[in-house]
Every structure is written in C-alpha cells, then in structure tokens.
Image: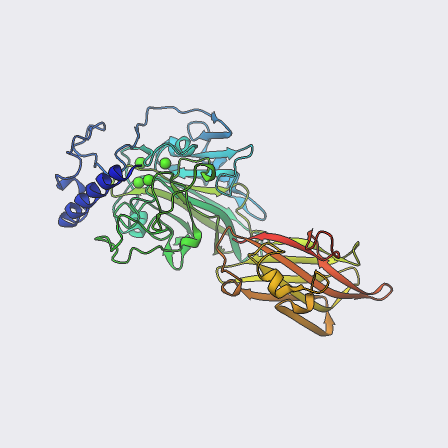
Length: 474
Ligand SMILES: [Ca+2]
Ligand SMILES: [Ca+2]
Ligand SMILES: [Ca+2]
Ligand SMILES: [Ca+2]
C-alpha cells in the first residue's frame, strides 16, 4: 500500500470514527456508514464501508464440500456432524457424552482443518475451526485485508457481553464430557486469528470468542476475554486513542503474530513477503493454552465465536486436534546424558507467562550432586555465552560460571530451577527460541561420579562434549 493510499484509508477511518462516536454503536443510524457507494449485496440498507473496502464479500451460497486447496484440507458441517467435530478434540482422559453435541450457526462456519506439507501456518497443524465467516477462507495466501462472509445470522448474548459490542454471525459448538475420578483440570490448545487486525484494533469491531466450561469463560488473557482488542500490536491508525479505547498502545504483543503484508504494526513494521504465513488471517495469536477446573461427572463445554458490531471481516479460532485433555500440554524433555553416553535421567523445560521451569530428574540409580544451568535467547557462541558462560582460556563453556547453580547436599533425584523470563538476556516473547545448557554432576553406586549434560547440540563444535538444546517459549 503506497503512502497516498494509506492516507486515504486513514481519513476514511477517522470519518467513520467521528460518526460512530456521534451515534454510539448504532451503525445503521449513521449515514457516513454504508451509503458511500458501497454495494448493498445483502439486501439491507447498510453494509458499513470500512477501511477494508477491498474486502471480498461472500455469501452463504449453500453446500460446501470437503475442500483441498494447496496444502490445506477443510471439511465443514455440511458433511460432518457436531459430534464428529467434538470427537476431533478429544485427548487423554476425556470422554464425550454420546448425543450431547450440538451446533448453532452456518454449517460453513465450523469444521475441521489440516495443514500439511512444509507450511508452518500458526503453530497448530490440524483440529477444529469455528469462524464468523466461511472456514475455507482462512486458507492462505493472504490476499485481502478483509476476507468476509456475511451470513446475516444472529450473534450470541454471552459473546456480546464479552465483546462489549453487539455480535453477529455466531458459530457455537457445545458438548458434554466426562473425566476419570481424581481429575481436577482440563486443558486444550488454541489460536485466535482475525481479519480485523490491524486496522480495526481498538475499534467497535472487536470480534471475540468464548470457551465456557460449566458456564464460566476461561479463554482469558490477564483476566480479559481473548479478542482483537486484548491481544494486538496496537493500531497505527489510532496513535493517540480511539473513541472506545483511550489507551491504544500494544496489548499483550508477545502473544501476537502480525501477518498483514500491507498494514504495518504500530512500529511501522511490515511483514516481509517471505515471512508471511499460509493463511488469510491478517493477524493471530500464538498458541494459547486453555485450562479450567473440571467437576466430577458431566462437564459442559461451549465454544463460540462471532463478529462484533457488523457481519464482516472474518475471525476464526483454531483448536488443536486431540488436545482436550486432563494433562497439561507437554513440556519439552531431553535425556540427561552422563559420561557422554549413559542415560542418567531427563531435563524438562516448560514455561508460563512469567517463568521458565527447568527440572532435572535423575533415574536408573543415578543421583544429582550438583546442577548448573544457563539459558539465553542468544545463540550459543554469541553474546552472553561468550562474555558470561565461556571459559576463555580453553574455549569451552564453563558450567561453574553458569548463572544458575546448586550444590545438592544431600544429593537428590529431582530439582527444579525457576527462571523469570524477564531475567533472560534480551527478554523473551512467546515463540522465541531459548538455548538451554543444563549441566549436572551425577553419581551412581557402581559407576561413580560423572559429568552430565541435557542432550542436544555441541556448544563448541570442536571443543568438549558440552551440549545445549533449544526450546520454543509458549
Ligand atoms: Ca485486516
Ligand atoms: Ca461474518
Ligand atoms: Ca487477510
Ligand atoms: Ca468481524
């Protein structure tokens, strides 16, 4: 988008904002909306014109079918039953109550998806998708700033409450499940994406979704419902505040991936062509984890998404296949190797919003006598690895100089380091890669004392056998 075009869009948006502010959210009551030569393809008076005027408006033309485009396959509810959809989500320890699944919304707005081939689309390769438009339209490449299907269907009162604005075109999947005795939590992994990014961040078009377990929505970020306005990188169109959100600085930008080739984020950054993901979504979240307390017996899960304030510019939520489970998403674990080739246990790493947790576990008769840990966003051999963790004289890493260390007296078979993400050099965001060097001194009755490393790549290719492994932050 050239500078001239950009300026035209900005003026249009500002005009709309002024108008919207004058009439609250009553879209149809404002002549600035929808009567600026915009086609009235739905047979209604106002299809609001927005900055996404290049949007492709599509219609519920009846049956869809299994569809394969490039490396993506989609099947919607013209083919599958709601129960088949729910079944795709089921993971460890969760059993669907037969006959409990129901769906409300367009049959084209819900289904299953699978990305294959080399496309690292958005961190989830297959699963269930719910959309405020046609599910098939999330397939890349990103050709429009506002892919749209206006189904002209109703919204959902619960979503309206979450969004803070009227909702439309809701897609709602609901089912019941049971968990084994003793299970106390349930988890799944998901991504939210939207065409409302980035130009309608902090506007009334705050497309939203909710995941209610037994009536409570747990799809939250810092206590707010996950939505366009809760996870974003700000909006360069509203540098000094919108009528709805005086503070338009980026919110939870660590959880946001910009995928719009024409629409810069608040820093003016345009995504290079080569880095665009194979999806129409202009922006989306990193993989988020849903976690909620379960009740013994029957639990009800309600998954819903909708457009806010009008019917256009699709949003979609992607839920990972088989991830609805009573165990949390797996931490990354590597072997703890003693004396270059003896399996002596594991080193596992996971993280939440504030800390990384690195757990050494010794097994097969081995015990931990000392542990030393270094982790950094710098690639080993660069940055603080050289200045802080390397022994300059020999050219090898020096575990004794690693920032985290513990002498285990008495010795132990398990130990966990809690490392604040904010303390890691350069700071880390979700999807950033950490490089972890986990060293230990281990002992076993017959084999004696050995040095041990978390298995991975050699820290110094031609040096000693010290190793590191990588970990992608959630
Ligand atoms: Ca957009
Ligand atoms: Ca829609
Ligand atoms: Ca798009
Ligand atoms: Ca929308």
